[in-house]
Length: 253
Ligand code: PGA
Image 1 (tube, helix red, strand yellow):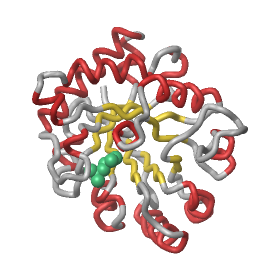
Image 2: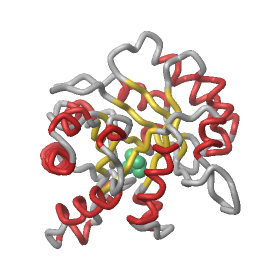
Image 3: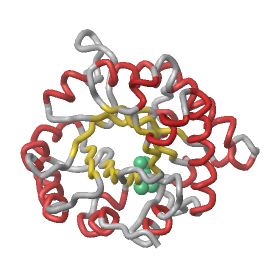
């Protein structure tokens, strides 16, 4: 079964308002008439609403790069799901490896974020992935299973249609060292199988599983040709309109 491809640009901690508006406008141009795939941008919080104006009516969706579970309150440094919606966002990246590694977010906290996003109608993009040590130690599947089971704890089947998963091996993020298409496919198939066991086959068949980690114009086609890879979560190559355009317009080979 083929799912509707989803190409996500994660801008991380890059762009001023001006840079962001230019980049979004350039990306919007290349999305005119795009019918068979979804494009989603995750700019920094500070530029989300300006970017929302630039991409209005283009079909491009927006995400926050993280989200809290509470609507408001004393949570210094956090952003609420209502704020994301208010700024024009429809989704939120949750559990990105930079949040896990640098800011020590653990599976329990990430699960609160996933459920918080869903409670307010935001699509959570739950990121999972092993470190190089874990891969070399033969722990990849164990870690992925932990990330998925705890990240989705308490998420009911009815909410799984509004959930996106992203496999991002930590060793491939920002390193230029992409997982091979075989390595990526192997983990994607494992995740889909796991979801089938936790929910039902239908849920697993429908859920989109993105690959992230040094996705570039020259490897997107081969990755997207894999049965269980339904899209990409792109960092570095999404900051350049030309390279992201090539990624958006991937052709399976
Ligand atoms: P990268 O980042 O494409 O620069 O490797 C991907 C990500 O962190 O989502």
